[in-house]
Length: 386
Image 1 (cartoon, rainbow, N blue to C red):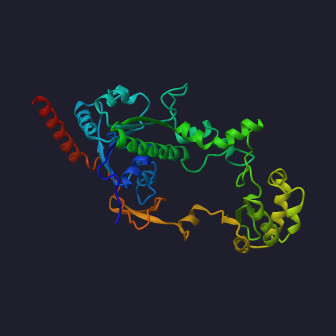
Image 2: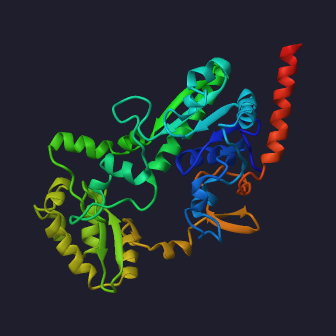
Image 3: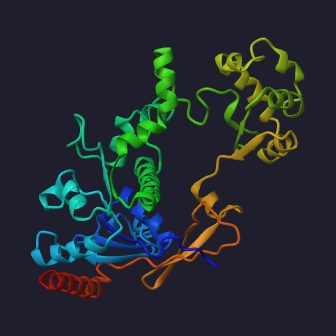
């Protein structure tokens, strides 16, 4: 039986693209009622592609279990519906352009005064303060601005991380902040105003290279599928043309690797490789020895040797490889008349089987939501008149 810790929670999310939908999706998975507010033309992520059984891959991934209502918030009738929603809501999430909510008369301080228990989460590119606060931001731009692209790729050129890491990190931080605020509200009865920015999220992820650069005065090198601080740790070509990755994390593993995998115990005590810092400094010479040994075996043979020596390892799989990976857990999500298989959420609660709601069509719940919340507004106005 699935636990739904947020089954009584009402979340209003004025959202688009990735970061805010990622956050609200996690709340929906935990049982919250999430009402997704879309523009009349819909969240533009609906049209990123048509590769998920005819649906947008991004949209199917991020919007399961939500209700959709299309509102033009510049129109009084639609704004009245939203206002009625906010009067009942526990959480408001929004990632409109900075200042857009205030221009609609929904600035954070006003909402706090009107709804003291409301938890507001504002997601933006650069936050509410600082010299970049008004800059537009998208994932790739923030990857570059925060320095992530400069440490990703090969020596020849920087590269984008191949998934939307800035958006995903921001959505994760927003979700965690909302959980903290809900816990605090349970103690104090008070809501909160939360500001989460993409740049801050990625700066946090960049802490180690930032500290290293401050200490060394040098930018970290780009090493492709090798680790900047540890050697050997990375991808090595085998005799059959496949790349095997492995990681040496301590001296016990290093000694086993040399004796059992390389069959070269002398390498372990070579002065060039006898300490972690020496191995990193002499990475090229060490890699040459490893590649010479690996070239005499297949990837499966090297993997078996690494497993036998209890050395962490893996293959440099393609996306097609992962689709048929024996360890991949998947869930089935309804999208229109289709069922889309996708990776399962990573956190498991033992003994629980969780179900996941369908992906909504644009404004699929609009009529019912308008009736529900227009009635609510009328009832509230009637009580005020009494």
